[in-house]
Length: 455
Image (tube, rainbow, N blue to C red; front, side, top):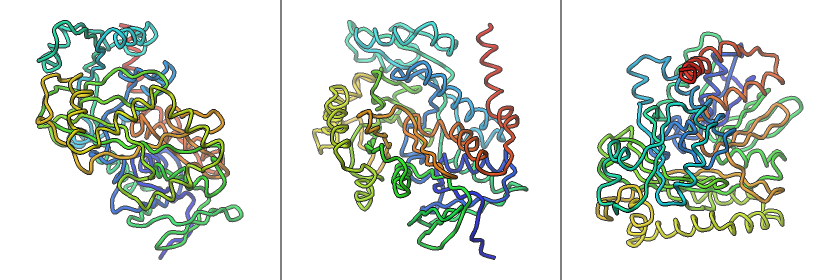
């Protein structure tokens, strides 16, 4: 029998949407869920392994984060780690793998920023992260020194406790576990696009290209489209969106782990970094570049009109964009990265300005542009403050929540799921096993963390 009404409808089956589906099916007494995804499988856009850096962001390499944001990010990362460790070993190893991590400071200015970042409070959060000198850098990553000016100053923060994640496989695992639930019916509708969302009395009307449904509560986890749907219902009027797209280049394997660059506070874009590829151990990826697109989805020109509606052109928007794009740090990054997209000269500029700061011996002939790789990272604009919002945003309304999750993005999937459920149970008569959630997903690494600090 075709079901038309659900207690909860979730729009979007990326890593956040599937994490929420999993958490609801395991830790609540919810009876039914509808999951709508416009593609034929989970995680086909930003959560797909080819479209992100495959990093479990724990906060130790994010030098543009405040200490409060670092603590929040570490907690979110630990949830993903604890979930993965609960899986059968072979499945876990397909989803998440250990990987050393380093944030590299080059020259006096970056070293000063790195020294400031490596504060006593930071050390308390990350007792396993150590500051290393040039010689030690060479022991862990020989290619960082090969071909480098011997007088160039280097310092790094280093950890062996990093991880790389295939977020597509993580999303797949979340959904598979939800479908196995004995108490919650999960109906998944792939290849079905949301066309209209309306509030009708105490219900929400959900119209797709294939059907019509109603739900008591709606969770929108549609990436950049979440703000678009929020605005269609009158929410988020003070917000806009800056669609930042990232491209990647790749070379043969030249790094043992992840090498990040120092990022300045207040700039939400990740600096170009070098990463192994969990799906191809023979290569190293360099990116993401930073490009501003007038689309909600990269390579989807049809999303331009939806982008303009999400941006919301008015006086506040114009002033906000002027202030954001006139900020020297941001404008410099955008202009420089614009050049990387140019044919012929783009690769040469990328090597000179970005890659050689990590691996000095690489030349333009040694890297290739990965066509079709990279996604859109929605950066939210607060039009009242005329500024970009650092981190994720959730817009809440009556029996509805819209998730927009820029960096650290996929890492925050289970943290987003927890906050979504906490909001949802205030509106619906369902129970949330918060103790079980904490025991499974928060406590294991918290205990080991406290033990490490004690030692």
